[in-house]
Image (cartoon, rainbow, N blue to C red; front, top):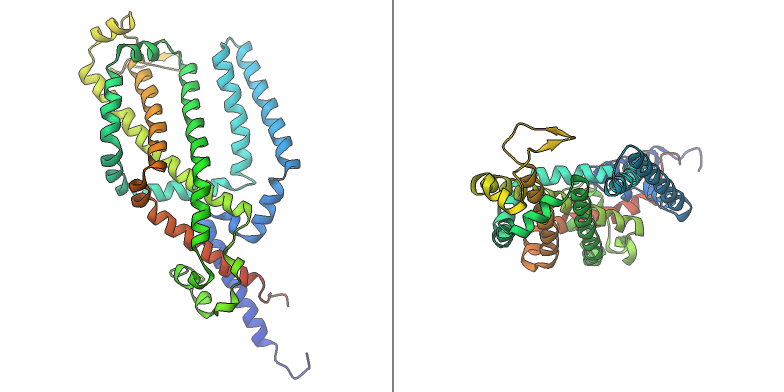
Length: 348
């Protein structure tokens, strides 16, 4: 560059590009997409490499086994020790995921989104609950169900809940990647301007020509696809949790109104016992047997709803349409963000 050239335009352009990058990265974080940021994507890919994941699995297994052994030594039975060990191992994985992998950012966004859209729960309840409650109510007044539920100790009850949760997550993980691939394939380079409307990069997208975005611009890395899957998974999990709590509250209320203590005694073979929390009886009218049966059936209802929500075309069209639009917008913003990564830097 000659001495007569003015470097100010280049510096100003570099600063604008840097500001746009930071705005896009903040937008990704605010929408539960931390892995869409280039530096984070590279770091997460490194943290999820086998040389990192295998030691993490070994550490989780050792801590889980130690927790199970300690529980057993303190007088816990086999089921209690197993639940403690599994919970400790899962906690280690969650700490790693929530910290270095920044999954907590995704969870906060998903929780906030569900809470902001509680109005969607009414049509959700009116669509999913009637048939579910009709079927589950017949189970609720079934003698065998009460005998099974009352016979479970608390640790075995939580083991059953863990089983339903595991099955539900496994089912979602077999279906949600298809949704992500469909969304990714649906965003073409020529559509990026439209999907970026209302984002910090809308102005940048408006200046791009058709040839500025290659065909692969809207393709995502494996970790970014995993980010979208996790966002869908956590958002669906919060929806299911709210539904499960509603079903649990219904069964508690219905049980208090319709199931007399004499009926419970006739079903389970002994008078209802007070509900206990960590071995301390609670002075509330809910019996331990009612709590056990309500929790058991609510967990089963959650698994049923997961299968229903992913399989039912009408539900998916009604409740996933807006979320799909948000995912398409994320793919478009990421495509424009990639062009900024190739732009001038403030250091040049």
